[in-house]
Length: 477
Image (cartoon, rainbow, N blue to C red):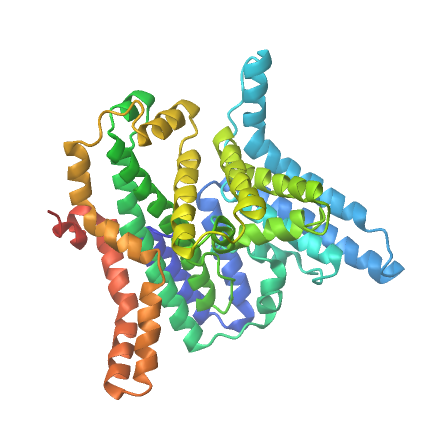
């Protein structure tokens, strides 16, 4: 079950909210736990045992840290519990996510083993593993208190808002809200609005960009060789838009659903495509992941308070792990190292020498070609597209098919580009600012704000029901 499905929106989420608000404050956490476990089990019941087991290990190790410190003082030797936590959780993550990749590479080099096992990746394991590790590390560092009640920690790790696709929520962010959250009507409205806008971003724009990208960049080396240079560029632009709209839409929906019931998750995307440098891009892109690696890898290694050589090493470790976290394939590692190269280039060579406009264009090009690396796990396909974008091995400069796809999706392209900027929020803010001095503008702004969630929900529903009912497709050339 995914957020952008009619089943989730009109059955699961609706039932969850009705039961949640009807059951009374004392039972609301238990309602959320039951719905979250059902949601997770929907995609793979057997892996629910893994989620519960990892949560139990995290709860037990953090609890033992707290007990030992209470008994023996702040100098109690509790590092062993942190080691147990990391070995168990990272070990399981490596087995499920990376063992096949490692054995595949060993087999390619040595012929051993004869067959590489195909291990199914449990849903959301990367997200809840990092969340639980951050919880135990924060208890070890004394930044948060250990949760004494197991099922409440399980609620944190399994909350269906964010356990599948993020954002990575720190326990200390919502620790107090687990027991003492207060739900305001303004929070409910903000949550509904964020969810409906995120749903529209996914169902209408991201899915349409994905369809265009798949049409222009079909799988297979021979299929890609048949594409024209303009087709490859246009396909990658659509993919660049799709991947932001996809990722940020799920984060928006997660944050919105949290707000509806009193949880305040941190922002995960901040219009990364308006960035003026690669460093600025990563301050805006997948913020929860970037801050996780900063706080739990980069700073413990010494951060930037070390020699230049060690700083480069720290950066290399972080970006290798960042790439590897996204998937068990060489292209993801190359993608991480791609950004490492440009971050080092900005640090030691470019610095602040580029004009703002040039820096923005440069950043977009770096990010665009980074998405080429990210998209193609097959190195042969990656080579064909890289070459084709520069006219090497491509089937001409352009073609009728490219023109057709461009005209078919031109309105989606325009709306998708606008959705990647803060234009809508800026206009909305401006209307309310003017409305402080003008009653008519204030009324118009409020009416528009009130109907926006309903309008987005209707349009999203039409898009999810089927393309033939999608109103945007009537605006084709």
